[in-house]
Length: 67
Image (cartoon, rainbow, N blue to C red; front, side):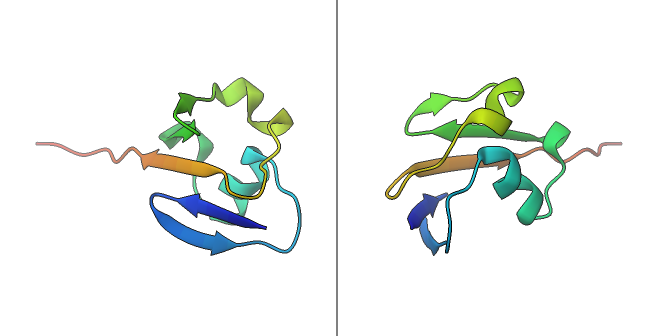
């Protein structure tokens, strides 16, 4: 299965949910926002949202900091 993440094609052996993808990429769920095929997916629905071949994801990872 091929998925595009932030414009880059990635290949996966099996079907994934958004939650398992975030976990597998080592991201902290509370610091990430995900757009799937041009629609924001609420964090509460990540574990039930299955990804399909050709899906396009935009993942924004929030970084803290400041003065």
